[in-house]
Length: 165
Image (cartoon, rainbow, N blue to C red; front, top):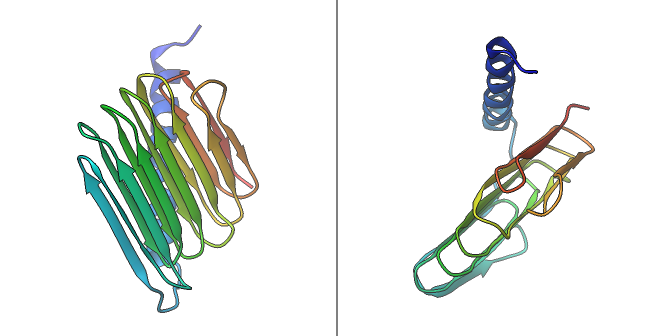
């Protein structure tokens, strides 16, 4: 059904899209905004924020959570033996929550970008949203990508999505 050229093209597209989004976000003009960082390796919790940016992260023993709000809002919650990462920049909102043996990553870049990534089964997932996009990974059904530029790949369900408008 899939020959090696089709697989290579699909992999190249999947790798190129996040790279292009990262380049775009690095060159996009940003106002002087507050940056917040909430890394929590092991059991603990961290939260910080103000009117421009906030982050919160919680994790239990044997897990790690990290949230970074760069002029935006991010939250991460890691359950036992899991990892959770949330990064939001320039007005986006990112949330990540993980259960045992999962590793969701949520990245929201730009105004109106919203990402929710949930890990409920063993496996990694990546969700990236650009300005105006909404990306959701539930871990139990196909990811959804709507609005602006968005991408998700979910190894829990072996499915993904992309939005290019």
